[in-house]
Length: 136
Image (spheres, helix red, strand yellow):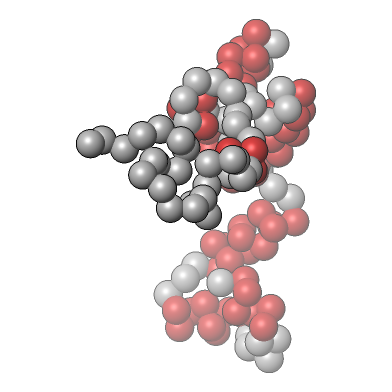
């Protein structure tokens, strides 16, 4: 609503709100909220800073469960779902070992694609590309 009046400064606030059946107190409360955020938003900003520090200290590995555990150890009383929401809004995500393939190590995909002595350009023989005989 406030964007409407920002984009169209020729509109008068009170008559427009009356036509839209919006109480003028609601509009002025929105304006006040833009200037001075509520306690919850201030606390969210503070928590996001703490979450960023924890996430960075873990080299981006910690997800919301571990970040929540660290905050709990530091005696910060915050809910798990709030940590999840703040991490999602800030674009932080942990690294799950299940997404990396087998095991917990990250593989170098370029090394896997490196040419070997067994490739498709081998001359045609009665053997497969890696030197093992084909079935008779």
